[in-house]
Image (cartoon, rainbow, N blue to C red; front, side, top):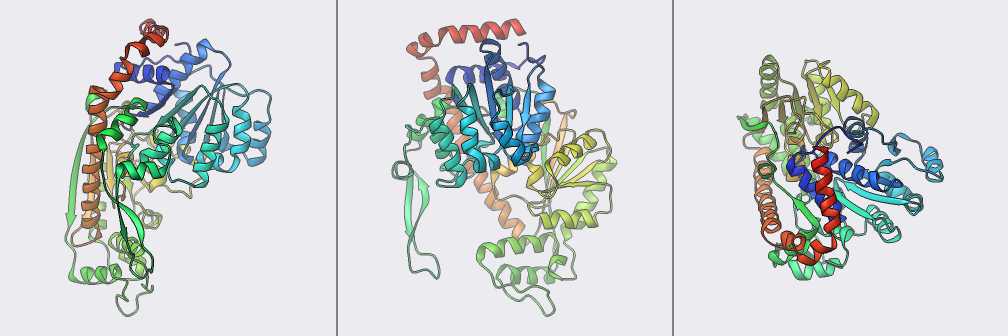
Length: 493
């Protein structure tokens, strides 16, 4: 392929064939397995044959700039424009241009605010539309949902690709909006989805006079999987046989004092914990979970003269890892905790939070790769989309609520191209605290999501997907394309 000097691994070849043949596909490869490369290679294959093809790649804010780096590293000869680097006035001028670069990269915020201008752009020329981190595209009736569906309905683009390592982060409902983009006829409405696949129950929240309906379980899962599998390319790390580093997960649990337990319980219950505490705690149950996690992370946030046991454990662990030559990433879900750790750790480091401008994050990555510092503290702004495989140690100071977010975080270091043969993931918890409850919730979610993934993978391998791709009529209709792709792969190798 003239636009890249890199050759795909056999499992990536299979993914590329699926993207080119199916035209509407959700590419669900694990983090670090080369989704960006597969998409760029597939686009390059099209570009060689239809010169006026363009691709619009939409992703999260941090990932959009990462795409710019990936395009530069993995390809050559493509012109490109990263819209998140431009002001609204500059983007408006760009949308009104007569010609466009080969690759346009933007984020979901720009899509939401400027979808009418983007729609006009996409209506001129041949476009591939790719929604990266497509698990971000969820929630019926949201501004983002309306913007993407407006583009989807008003632009006749030839190829529509979704990409996500975690297309199902917590619940089956997350498949619905992604399927609505790929083929809205498969499951037409939320009402259809709820009726056919969800067990619903009415409950009355405390303090309310009205009932609400919630999902308490699922049904007809085999049917759901058969409906979505023709549009889904899903493989596990074990199946891909790619050179991932070996991952070891280590759990650390720290004893807490009786005073720590007492105040933690008071914060969790929304009570005034003690005389002289700086904050009042009359709040909702949801807020109490956040406050109790912040208390477990750093009681000083509440004006309490206690230090979290796991903070001492963190300092010891970081020193041990750095002494071994490790490069370390430390995650907290909360910016306040990241700031606390940054101010108190006493070691050379940098931080990545939402306060760090996106271009500056790329500078941080370059410095980290150049060994200018060995330690990064980050929240979700660094936990997704950034390639940090220079690190071999990931520490969860607290866990995210979503299993999808957990896998995204771990995927920062478990990637092909890692210079390490072995990487370590540390999970820090305080005993008798929100940490234990959160760990249990995440473990339960992991079991459910992994079972979903296994069902999807099994079904794709054994039933719907192969029935679809190996169907004689399908093969006859796409024979030339399949042969051309296979021939090109062999020639490039």
